[in-house]
Length: 492
Figure (cartoon, rainbow, N blue to C red):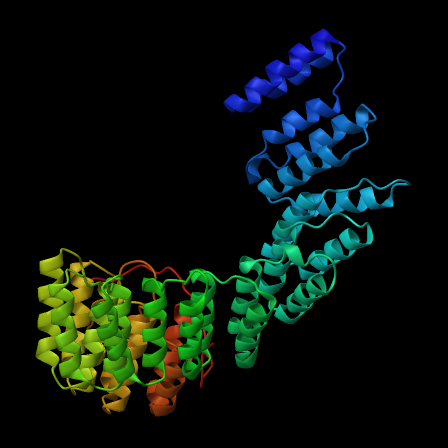
């Protein structure tokens, strides 16, 4: 009737405006006027649900449908499914979906709706529901789309079921649905085999794409290059680059392409080839090196103690206007510490933070403390810790205390190792500066090493202090992951 159409127009306007309270007030008014809810009413209300806090309204909408004896059709269920996904109410969605399947004439759920549900359950790591949805969809002969197929492949790959995803892709190719397969789907498969470190499959997928005439774009090639780098198959890189050049039209490498290859060579220990690629990149001039690429090269230099090469690279970064980050500083601290250039490490941290206007984070300071330890200056590492806590710019974390503890143990400084541990857990009996608020603790294996090094008297004293603070501490070891507990800080 005209009145109902008017109400629906007003209801839709309120929902579009975000006035959910007014929308529900309108529903109440409709009831008072003897105008019952329809499928259109519920579809409009479903559009208003956007967050988890609104999920409870889904049950109210289902009650409206039940009161009006309205059966869900394809469109209404699609809206309901989308609302459940937006509000994170997958349990209610699955319950309603199962009810639809049990009806005498099941509602034909659309391909896009199946795709949305598969994606949502995949993100929730509910693989069984993903598999059931796919099975039902195929049994009901729902028209498959590239998007739905992509959602299924992504859901399986992200849950470590890449072999099953690959089978689905091959089944689609063998049937009359090969036109649905695209570059994105194949890139997802490559990503899955990379994550599971199935070396040969990465190359096999690439060759199959070539044979099947599936076009590769820069993203696809970068995904495969990342797979080769992670799997230690850098010898396959030249063939992949040739594939990029021979493509019609040729696929142009971007900064991610170069960064990935450089990182791969550095991981493989072939730093010279990484430098050669940088030189080639600069000669071509179409892509400018960025911080990520330079950091990969610096890290490669650090692993091989190539201090001079790293410092030259650092100067090049400055000439090219590439701004270093805390990650850059962390690498340099490691490199200079191993190279017995401790003063230079301190100077670079000071100079860079002042010149580029950023503050060093705890990862940088931890690497600097580790550099002190490498240079047999444990006391300087402890003093640096106290200065960091005093300045309050960043907070030492579990790794910081673990590095300090291991360093003191390796240097045979048992009393200092004990002091570091007591400081890390905010226990009495040390002269280091404690952080405010939450204690950080140390790695479980490092703590076990300390306990094994202590005299029975020292160990008993430490265990008692742990117990006084309510921290579980067996006589020989602690849990691998120390619990965080708030204790009142003591100031020195």
